[in-house]
Image 1 (tube, rainbow, N blue to C red):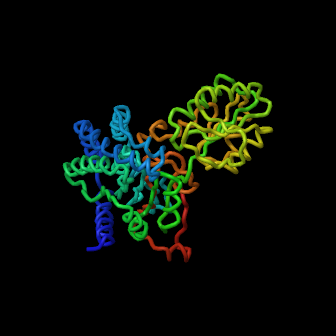
Image 2: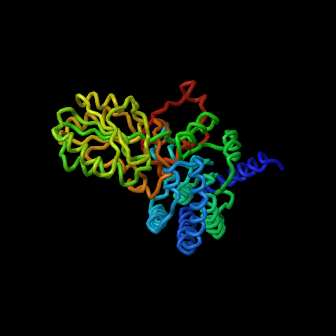
Image 3: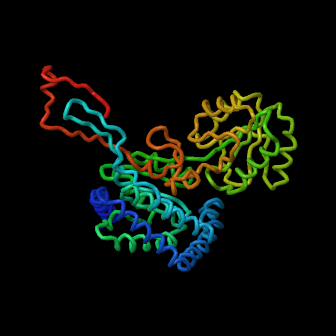
Length: 419
């Protein structure tokens, strides 16, 4: 059997399993999630051991230039990440099942009722680099939303991904009626190429990783892709901004986790902001490299580096962001509510903030329990994608033998009444 045959077999089984998953009760889903969280807690030391192996291998990959420093930094698991991961699973359990929700109901005619009802997307391929905790986040959301998944992690995290997957498989196999083929993990780079060809089976691809990975996926598949290619986030310091607030927000947005996609990369400062020099000195003294002379404004540094540019006014700031930004998350620091609203209305990004760090762009912080990624799309989901972003809807029509011909000939009339 060829590699293509193996992957196709996995995909077909996952597609068959999704129908069973669609009808699984919320209680069964939550039971599986609880068992996963317990499995992580029980196997914590083994997980750290496997993660240590990945870190040792990744050091060699970093030295050879095969992965970036940002990718290496995302790879390490610690007690805090483990705690947040388990909490994230419990948060998903507490959320309402997003499927089978009636969005609206309309009586087309007496006895003929149309309902718009939420449902899972179906079979989702999720390709991610480093950050092995992503596997648990995504699996939790997939289970709760009733979606089957095929997961592909980066080779730099193979050992950690494998033990997480074993924990997941053991958990779902213990739940009566849960289709075990609904959650799958593949390993090789060739597997990605194969997956991208199966548009007749896979409903959506979600990439989480470098610009190179995301662009490769978008260019090599007919399957809809949900995600973002880069995180070039901005903070605009307006002329009336509070100096202490600006320092605090920018410092957090750049240093709290520099390699994150919601870390600030460019600070725009109004020419009349009186403490511009002091702000720049503060950032430099905080071990941040501040670049002032450049014409490259579309760079994602993923490090303690940022571009610092003086702009004439609010309009120039908005135009700069819309031209060079990645439509991810952008912020204005100002006491002027009117200009803040203008900024938030005109900046074409998935997240627009007033007086808050860009690092808040996160499914966990939004109360989604976890996220499968952040999307800059304007169709499908946008921003941090949680449970709701993994659902679509269908129309359910309930009748009593009605036929269109009666309405076409005028024997019956529609009255289209919401109920």
